[in-house]
Picture 1: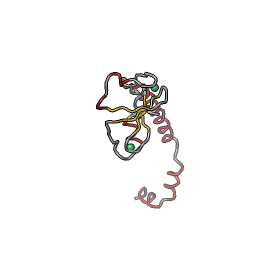
Picture 2 (picture 1 turned 90 degrees about the vertical axis):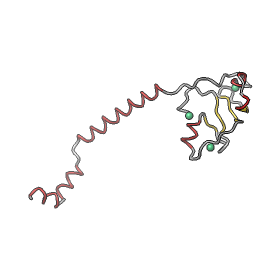
Picture 3 (picture 1 turned 180 degrees about the vertical axis):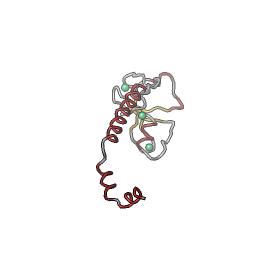
Picture 4 (picture 1 turned 60 degrees about the vertical axis):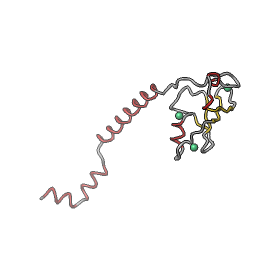
Amino acid sequence: MCKHILNAQVAVRSPCCKKWFDCADCHAEQETHPLLQRFEMIFACKKCKKCFRKDAQEMEEADEYCPHCDNHYVIPAKTPQAAISVESEDVRVDNRMIRDDRVKPNPEKERRTIFDPDADGDKLG
Ligand SMILES: [Zn+2]
Ligand SMILES: [Zn+2]
Ligand SMILES: [Zn+2]
Protein backbone atom coordinates (compact mmCIF):
# COMPACT_ATOMS: atom_id res chain seq x y z
CA MET A 1 0.00 0.00 0.00
CA CYS A 2 1.13 3.53 -0.80
CA LYS A 3 1.96 5.66 2.23
CA HIS A 4 2.79 8.77 0.19
CA ILE A 5 -0.57 9.45 -1.46
CA LEU A 6 -3.43 8.36 0.75
CA ASN A 7 -6.15 8.99 -1.79
CA ALA A 8 -4.52 7.35 -4.81
CA GLN A 9 -7.24 6.42 -7.28
CA VAL A 10 -5.07 4.49 -9.71
CA ALA A 11 -1.99 2.31 -9.78
CA VAL A 12 0.59 2.93 -12.49
CA ARG A 13 2.50 0.19 -14.25
CA SER A 14 6.16 1.15 -14.43
CA PRO A 15 7.57 0.82 -17.98
CA CYS A 16 10.98 -0.25 -16.60
CA CYS A 17 10.17 -3.24 -14.35
CA LYS A 18 6.52 -3.85 -15.33
CA LYS A 19 5.29 -3.67 -11.76
CA TRP A 20 2.34 -1.81 -10.28
CA PHE A 21 3.02 1.23 -8.12
CA ASP A 22 0.76 3.86 -6.59
CA CYS A 23 3.30 6.62 -7.04
CA ALA A 24 6.90 7.32 -8.07
CA ASP A 25 8.01 7.32 -4.41
CA CYS A 26 6.80 3.75 -3.98
CA HIS A 27 8.89 2.73 -6.99
CA ALA A 28 11.95 4.52 -5.59
CA GLU A 29 11.60 2.71 -2.25
CA GLN A 30 11.12 -0.77 -3.69
CA GLU A 31 13.47 -0.67 -6.69
CA THR A 32 17.11 0.29 -7.03
CA HIS A 33 16.85 1.63 -10.58
CA PRO A 34 15.36 5.00 -11.58
CA LEU A 35 11.77 5.03 -12.78
CA LEU A 36 11.57 5.03 -16.55
CA GLN A 37 9.37 7.89 -17.73
CA ARG A 38 7.16 7.29 -20.73
CA PHE A 39 4.40 9.36 -22.23
CA GLU A 40 2.18 6.35 -22.63
CA MET A 41 1.26 4.99 -19.22
CA ILE A 42 -0.82 2.01 -18.18
CA PHE A 43 -3.12 2.68 -15.24
CA ALA A 44 -5.27 0.39 -13.14
CA CYS A 45 -8.35 1.98 -11.62
CA LYS A 46 -8.61 1.19 -7.90
CA LYS A 47 -12.37 1.52 -8.00
CA CYS A 48 -13.30 -0.90 -10.80
CA LYS A 49 -9.91 -2.74 -10.95
CA LYS A 50 -9.74 -2.35 -14.72
CA CYS A 51 -6.70 -1.24 -16.72
CA PHE A 52 -6.53 1.52 -19.24
CA ARG A 53 -3.86 3.25 -21.28
CA LYS A 54 -3.22 7.00 -21.42
CA ASP A 55 -0.85 9.13 -23.40
CA ALA A 56 0.38 11.94 -21.17
CA GLN A 57 1.04 14.08 -24.23
CA GLU A 58 -2.62 13.97 -25.18
CA MET A 59 -4.19 14.35 -21.75
CA GLU A 60 -7.48 16.21 -21.82
CA GLU A 61 -9.91 16.97 -19.05
CA ALA A 62 -12.01 13.96 -20.03
CA ASP A 63 -8.93 11.76 -19.62
CA GLU A 64 -8.87 12.48 -15.89
CA TYR A 65 -11.70 9.99 -15.50
CA CYS A 66 -11.54 6.21 -15.63
CA PRO A 67 -12.91 5.14 -19.03
CA HIS A 68 -14.62 2.15 -17.36
CA CYS A 69 -16.35 3.63 -14.29
CA ASP A 70 -15.82 7.42 -14.65
CA ASN A 71 -13.82 7.50 -11.40
CA HIS A 72 -12.02 10.87 -11.26
CA TYR A 73 -8.46 9.68 -10.69
CA VAL A 74 -6.52 12.92 -11.35
CA ILE A 75 -7.10 14.63 -8.01
CA PRO A 76 -4.86 16.62 -5.61
CA ALA A 77 -2.72 14.17 -3.65
CA LYS A 78 -3.52 13.77 0.02
CA THR A 79 -0.24 13.28 1.86
CA PRO A 80 -0.09 11.51 5.25
CA GLN A 81 0.39 14.38 7.75
CA ALA A 82 -1.69 12.68 10.45
CA ALA A 83 0.31 9.48 10.07
CA ILE A 84 3.58 11.38 10.64
CA SER A 85 2.38 12.80 13.98
CA VAL A 86 1.42 9.29 15.14
CA GLU A 87 4.87 8.05 14.12
CA SER A 88 6.67 10.73 16.16
CA GLU A 89 4.56 9.78 19.18
CA ASP A 90 5.71 6.18 18.78
CA VAL A 91 9.33 7.35 18.67
CA ARG A 92 8.84 9.18 21.97
CA VAL A 93 7.54 5.99 23.60
CA ASP A 94 10.55 4.09 22.25
CA ASN A 95 12.95 6.71 23.63
CA ARG A 96 11.37 6.39 27.08
CA MET A 97 11.87 2.64 26.98
CA ILE A 98 15.51 3.05 25.97
CA ARG A 99 16.09 5.50 28.85
CA ASP A 100 14.53 3.04 31.33
CA ASP A 101 16.96 0.35 30.20
CA ARG A 102 19.90 2.66 30.82
CA VAL A 103 18.77 3.45 34.38
CA LYS A 104 18.71 -0.24 35.27
CA PRO A 105 22.08 -1.61 36.51
CA ASN A 106 24.04 -3.26 33.74
CA PRO A 107 25.37 -6.56 35.16
CA GLU A 108 27.57 -7.15 32.13
CA LYS A 109 29.43 -3.89 32.70
CA GLU A 110 29.94 -4.57 36.43
CA ARG A 111 31.38 -8.00 35.73
CA ARG A 112 33.81 -6.49 33.24
CA THR A 113 35.08 -3.99 35.83
CA ILE A 114 35.67 -6.70 38.46
CA PHE A 115 37.56 -9.02 36.14
CA ASP A 116 39.48 -6.35 34.25
CA PRO A 117 42.92 -5.96 35.92
CA ASP A 118 43.70 -2.81 33.91
CA ALA A 119 40.70 -0.97 35.39
CA ASP A 120 41.84 -1.87 38.94
CA GLY A 121 45.34 -0.74 38.17
CA ASP A 122 44.08 2.65 37.01
CA LYS A 123 42.11 3.08 40.24
CA LEU A 124 45.11 2.26 42.47
CA GLY A 125 47.50 4.41 40.49
ZN1 LIG B 1 11.13 0.13 -12.36
ZN1 LIG C 1 3.76 5.90 -2.76
ZN1 LIG D 1 -12.60 2.58 -12.96
